Image (tube, rainbow, N blue to C red; front, side):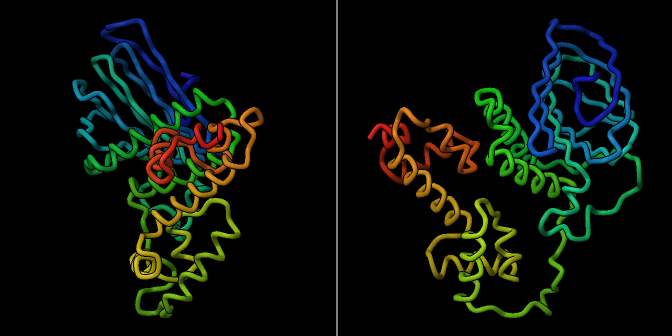
Amino acid sequence: MASVRGADCTMMLQNVARHSWQIQAADLAGVRVQLGRLGSGNIIEGQSYPDGYFIYLPLSETCEYMANGAAIPKNAFLIFEPGSEFSLSTKLEHDWCTIFIPADQLCCHPGLEEGPAPSDPMICRTTRPSRTLADRFRTSAHEILSTARNHPEFESSLAANVASAQLIDLGSTIMGCEHERATSRDGRPKRSRKEIIQRVEELVEEREQVSVRELATAAQVSERTLRQAFYEVFGVGPTRYLQLKKLHEIYRVLRQAEPGQTTVARVFLEHGACEFGRVAARYCELFGELPSETLRR
C-alpha cells in the first residue's frame, strides 16, 4: 500500500461491503496525518518506517480491530515503534486515523529533553483506552485534513507548523512521553509574577507562534505556576491570553486590508489559525461581527 505514509505494508481485502477505499493525507513539516475509509475488512502486514513513530487509532465502533492477534480496545491507540513489524486485521468496512512523527522532532520537542519513554525496540504496543485523547486525536485530524483539502496553500503556511507542533504535543501525551523539566521542583528558582510575565512577553514578541509549554520553559516555572501568574495579572489563563492576542492581530490586519487584496482564509493561515470555524466563532464572540464583515469594512 504505497498510499499509506509511515509504513511499508501490503493489504489483502476480505468481506467487501462497498468498492470504495479512500486515504486523505496532509504533510505538516514532516508530521504526516492520514484518514482512511475502507469499504471492506482487510489484512495488512508490514513494517513501520525506522525514522519515526506511527500512531494508529481505529474509528469504527461496529468493527473489531486486531493487532498482532490481539483486539485493540475502544478509544485505545496502537503505537508503532520505529521499524516495528505488525499485522492488522478487520472483518468489516472501517475507518482509521494515523499520525507519523519523525523521531528527531519528537526528541527535540519542548519538555521532552530526555526523548520518548524507553520501550523494547521494534515493537508495536497498545495504550490504555482514553476517550478524551481519542476525541482530541480524531477532531484534530479531521480539522487538519479539511483545511488541507479546502486550502492548498495550508501545508506550506505558518498554520501548518502550528498544527504540526500541536500534533507532536498530542502524540507525546498518547505515548506517555511527558517528562518533568530539567530543573526539579525543589531546585527550580522562585520567580516573581512580574518576572514571569516579563519573560513570557519577551518570548511572545520574538516568536510568532508559541505554546504554553514553551512559555513555562522560558519562564523556568511549572505550567501550574504560569497559569496562576496569568490569572493574577490578567484574569485569564495563558491559553486564553494567547487566543486573545492572536484574535486581535487578525482583527488589526483585516481592518487594514483591502477586500480585493486578501481573504479571511489567507489572513487566518498567515497567523497560524487552521481551525477556521472555531477561530471565526471566537472572533465573532469577541468583536461582534464575522471576520468577513471586518474585511468588507
